[in-house]
Length: 258
Image: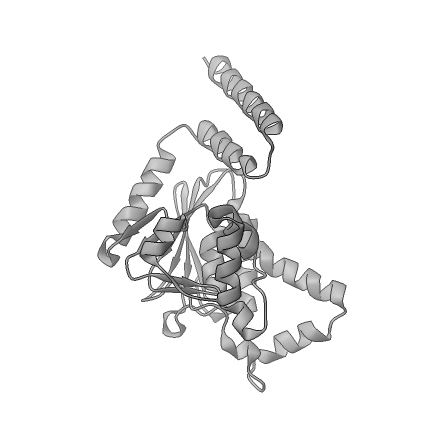
């Protein structure tokens, strides 16, 4: 993908087992449109088994300022898309939004580990895109915010489930209902950030995570990632069974491959 308007300002570059996806609209702080979400979903649909790590970035000084406000501005060309959405029957409108959510949900697909490299602002849909990833590396000037409720909306791009997983019910409720900003230091303290680094060290920090994730055998990494993901929802009995089954598969692979 080239990253132009026709591609929703999304660029995808492959280097071996690493796929880098870049929001490439820096003059608008990588504000997102429906075309952006469709382009992200298309990237997810194009994944193959050789990809192990997906790095998600935003070009320029900010990761993403969130929804392009043109969608909510009467008379703006983008407003027609949301007007069309409102005119649909409820079930069809929800199905349209499900397609948008697909642009976010694939970032936790089996077989890959996704890493968000976040600098500057990650607001609304931008914050939800960072939350959709498995890991987040923030610059020390980064700020996350979920202001949807202040606009009369709700976070609907998979953000609520992942936020509760990361910070718990009470903190997630507070952040979503107040729409207050969370700086990098607080994000690290509450578990939203895996690392916080100076802006000029972001690339090196992300490269370090990529190298570490790719170092173990692919099969063991993928099985382990699947176990950690399932542990969020499984009870102890189900999770113990998942561990047993995964270990037997690994042993068969190791011993059978000799």
